[in-house]
Length: 576
Image 1 (cartoon, one colour):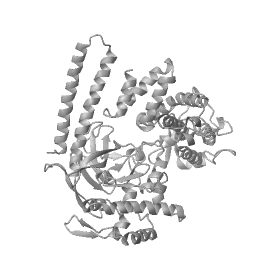
Image 2 (tube, one colour; image 1 turned 120 degrees about the horizontal axis):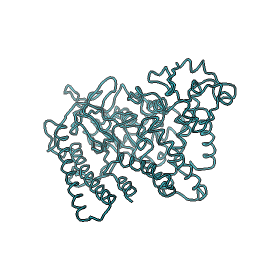
Image 3 (cartoon, helix red, strand yellow; image 1 turned 180 degrees about the horizontal axis):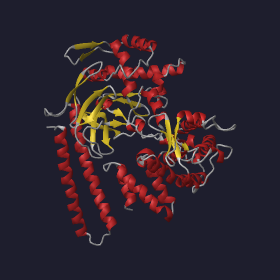
């Protein structure tokens, strides 16, 4: 028997209290039996028990949610059943602790009806559709390809093959799954991005083989509507465009309830995939792909459940908004976008550090000691004003364009255009391939350092583009260490130089994210990147880096789920 949100929360609280009480009892017994052990050994033993308990809680919550999504459990009347209203309607059984809301501002979303603690499983479901991409689309498939209106033969062929794979997968699903998927279409939020000629071509190709069945839909007033195969061919690509997620380089999947989880640039859940076995209609166990949403921070009753479609992104608001619109037809209204200054795209304040005092009228030359003498200006939430974080001077967008002209030889005509120029360089850096063979090639390194130096001397080190190169180096070093990469792409001397540069630069990146942006550095730099850098500090750092390494390690341990494999690796470092 499953429980309502309130009962599920109470049961989780009771279970956690019992299990953590058991931990304390086990630790007391362990200390009594091993009186000669030091405090680190005891802490290591306790951490191991905490991981075991966290794994049990995770497995219980996952099973509870999965039973709801697959219909393999009795459900109390108080468990939420709701009707998703859109162009089409369908009754949904929601896991305990979630409800469905719809509004003009945010569209459809899942809302918490209980409190979730960090690491709680908020939602688990079997993916509605799992599509294996054609071989020639692997590595080049993006949402932009599906929206791209280019008529070149290669792009059109890739688009056709991807859409064909989506439609074929939809056609093979049972009618209930097809009906739920068709309910995900939102006419107001998705335009007809797939051109009519291509839709007609796909339909003709499908109808000749009779692979797209009609689907019966119930509306909110109880009427039944038949969605023809031809109409499904038009709708399915749009639904994939708005709701699908890429599980790996060659697999995209379409969750159903998960498609109701809205985007936020500072999301409260993390999404992960795993393969498990469920009982099929024939009674046999079948492998299936699950998608899970784990609370990355406490979620209060009434909060929207959110995930970042961009991952943990350090891009400035304007760049994030552009990417979201181009890939998902989405205009983000999260707090980070509409209530927070655009600190990432900042410039050295022209009042604190006047243009007249800069080399050539625009070059910012300073030492670390000088950097505390001036502030940075960034665009405010009203989008038409800029303000300095140090002197508090405010500027209008018009003043940025007309009152702060840059001299001949500068990369832009004025301060506003300088911001646009820096963003463009930053996007070039952020788009660099993280494959070490590409990123660390001579050409890429030379060009990137030119961009990096240009950004530092014009915008200052707190600009996102300045930090992006440091982040890219850290990501490249991480991939070099965890992937099977040809060691010959870097000589030992270059590896040592790169490692030295990364370890010297990482504290600046960490401090920028944590102090200047006021974001969680582990989440936004990346847990795996942080773990790799910590391991490099342990291997190459001296006593002067021990304190920093300890800070990073404890922050990483606090951030990652206690039940995760990474928690084991971090504990091994903490209690070595």
